[in-house]
Length: 561
Image 1 (cartoon, rainbow, N blue to C red):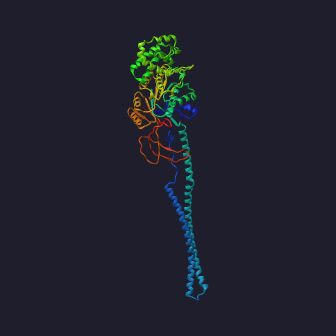
Image 2 (image 1 turned 45 degrees about the vertical axis):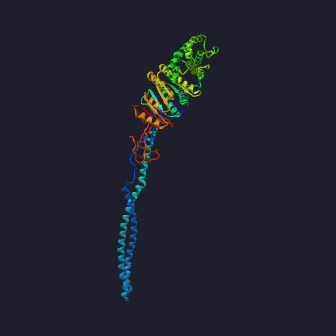
Image 3 (image 1 turned 120 degrees about the horizontal axis):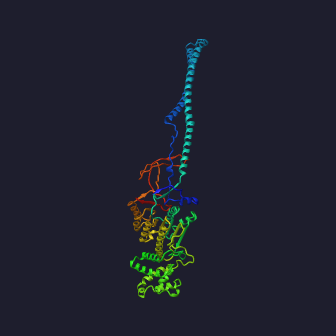
């Protein structure tokens, strides 16, 4: 089985028609992992401040701060140096006067002042020179710090902004590329299967699967014959969409609700009516001797009656043979037919066949209302002309034992419809919902007819019992396993897939995280957030999961290896 991206997933209105009624078998859709398809940004990495640049900038800032402290300290030292000669002169003068109290003040000052002035000049020149040297060094440091700050505060942010703009533009284009493709991909078989078995699921899951698969069959121009035995209207969604959305000619027959308007044996000759009734009754009894007696009785009765052969006329004829129906009540039996029936069996034969006559009359009597309406529709045994979709659905109303006989009759009629339809119009497809209710012999016959006539069959089984598992193994091209109800069915499903079948994954789920994990499988990918958030997590972490079907029932498909 392979997923082929034919159309988008169904939405509503025209989008629903485009998604469903297009050629190409589909069992459902699975959502693409859009995030994993977005390629990571392949451009240059984000501009950042290199460690050596950061360390150099910090060192320059520290040097400028230390230089400021040094300059303040040097200014204090310069002032002290300027005061030192004056203090020295004053100290010398005071000491000199103390030793020579009679010395003249003027002559003393005249000697000291030039010396002090000369020292002050020398010290001032030295202090000024040192200040100039310190100022030039400080200016160089501040220039270097200004250049470094300009790179850090203006140039680097500008480069980072340009890098972000380029990355956002690239990611926007990448998301537009990914989102322009269909977000849901159909899941279909790699080749057209002749027989498909679906096991498990519920009514809603069957509705969705039948609608998805059936609409794709109708889109190819095939006629789809549906036999709904679920008594839950599982084919209603497909019929409504076919009529209302895709303008496909759809015919739905509800039994036994529409019994008066249905000509049950329409299109069958006497031999075919006899065969159908024997097969339907034999499916319940299984006694070969009894079936031979029924064949003898019904063959004689149908020989005596002219067309049309209806359940009501057959019931009256059997009652006449039993002498249980007064002659005046045989309004549906003609005079010639009456004479033939009265001479059909001798008295001894009627006595020997009385038990079988009674059982046949009792079986056909509840069906006497079929075809009693004024305007009759085509019966269940003849394909409807021009109908793209024909559905026979059992509603379950009425008596259970009668419904069981009706089910066997409908199955016989369905098989004959398919045989006649395949001969008249190639490309017939059949779907049986509730196939576990069909006798094994009838299912085997339907499968044989499918292989001989070339029409496709899709069988829906409600559960995976041992009997169903045995049937599903033989002759199945595709096996679909939906939601199962208990562990026993899951074990049987595992045994089926592991012995002669290969499990096909309808999707590959990719997840990512910061932590490492080891899962079974081989795949890789990256996922991230949308174009407005550059935060990403990139980690290979692969695994497989099967998806598809409906919100309440998942479909896992397997095909023969």
